[in-house]
Image 1 (tube, rainbow, N blue to C red):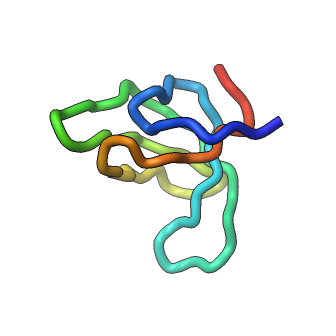
Image 2: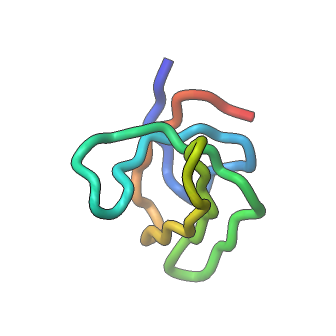
Length: 70
């Protein structure tokens, strides 16, 4: 079951649907480290199996699709 949630509600271990930079297809990525929240953005370190980790930054209130929780 997939749910759209605001990025500020993400937790370590959540699996989200993202489109990595330079790619056309959506894929699942796991929230890997503590989430950084500021007054206007949320920074999340993500991991896709077999690839390098990367940091994604979203404005507050952006919706992401979570397919599995921690």
